[in-house]
Image (cartoon, rainbow over all chains, first blue to last red; front, side, top):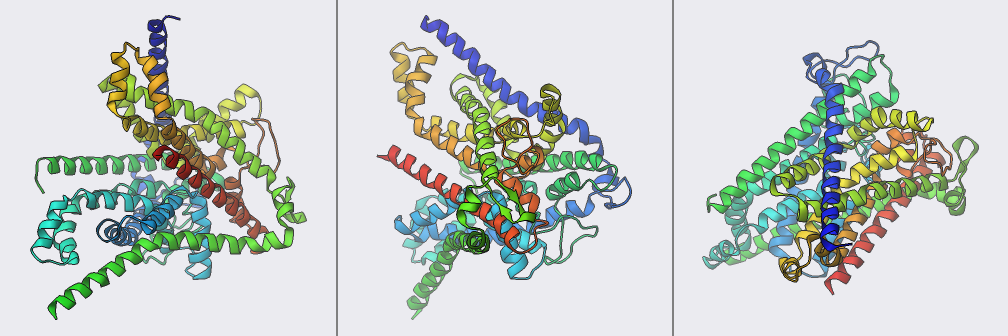
Length: 285
Length: 288
């Protein structure tokens, strides 16, 4: 075959593949919104009480659980990953130990979320006797998302120019003073962006949540030790148990609502990251 | 004296942050400890061979063979990769080499969105759209390995695409320029230069996609049918390790039944560690 012809065929081929990928996405999104968007946007759905015996139930406690769980997870994960990132970036020398920590992080990132789920159930729910609660779910998700949190925090610290540190140290400050007064304030926008990005993932997570946080509640959880039912897990539960006549409606609406929330959060986080990086290139901060 | 406080403050902070960094190791160790200790009961009372090499799963009759689910995991994962890997790598090449800027931007955004869709939503999609469609075409229940493979293909697609794009981007631009200056067409450059040069990266992307497919739980559970049988048919109800764990964990009483679910988790854990080690080996080879 003439190389020119082969090239043309290949171009058509790659265009087709790109368009297939795009149409898979469009098809899924259109189907989900087509079936669930109207339900999802009804206040009686997203702000209504769930019902166990009659149709027309809403998902207010589930929505609240998801948000509560995401906040709690970040509250636990952020200080730990910040500490770990400071160690890896500011104190540690490249060597066996940091290599080993990276290996552990890679492993954490590859473990299936259901393994985290039943680990969290064994440790937090059963052994520590917390029972099904937000805190158990948040601790489990904090471990699950640790590699992601840590990577973005470390990236933010790495963006701080080395000269800032040298200038501070040459004025006689200690390492800790340098970190506290120079590195952290400079890296803060990046750290915050990095903390927001995984929220979408946390809210969409179900396998790690259903056996740690709970599947159904009809009140708003208050304390972290209250049981809760995040939306993603509830969608699965409603689908599997199907105990109300209009469960299909609930599942369709729930899927659309979850998708809207996740897309919105991801969009905002990316927007924030973009604003932050533009500011940086202008020499701002 | 002041200096003393200063430096002791430093070492105090250093120790504190060191503890944070060590937490990732602690987490892995704890996960291993608890999964192993919980699976001991089944492993000792039923026996490793009776668990790993038997397809008979019947907790009521004290049969705990997980081979059928192991096969289910292997087949759905392979199926997912057969669908997802060519599409993912193809999309990556499209994004990196072929697509005009605007189109590339749109597809890149689309892949990002696809990556963000929660697995329970993909599962919902499989259950509501895919399973009835397969049922109509093949005259079966529609649940099974085929449905699970398509769902997994969709889920590994963004993983493989993103990582493949990264590995293509990391190639030195001179490679492409040199090839073009020799008069090679774009396809010749892609086939003879770029794909061989990015081979390790593309392999790592596929392996990580495989990890995602093995561990995917909710979406698979919703479309695989959850029967206890070993099947090589694409459209018969069956189970994977993950779907079995999530289906039975809620009802399993403490004892051998529950413990056998932890054995499945242990198998998943070992799979994941093997993948990580393989990736380390592949990327080290690239480094040399």
